[in-house]
Image (cartoon, rainbow, N blue to C red):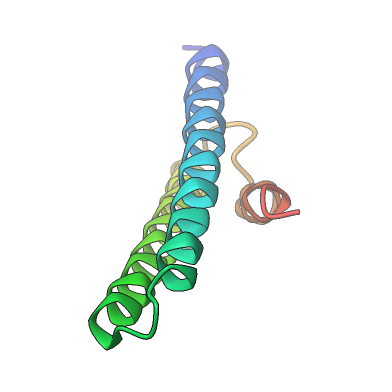
Length: 96
């Protein structure tokens, strides 16, 4: 049974999800920056902005880890085109 089309659809979905999460991360990082700049010296507002920034970055890290884990599982199961090193490189290429 040829699983190539299934793997390519899955990889396309992972790439699209990573791209959407990159856009969402950029939005939330900018929002956290705005919150930080408009804090006006309020300690509570500054801490809220830091929390927003940490949450955005942790969420993006989770998405990247999901892509890497999917590549590792696909490579372990012998799916064609799911080399773990290539998946990790593709995930990191979204950062640049």
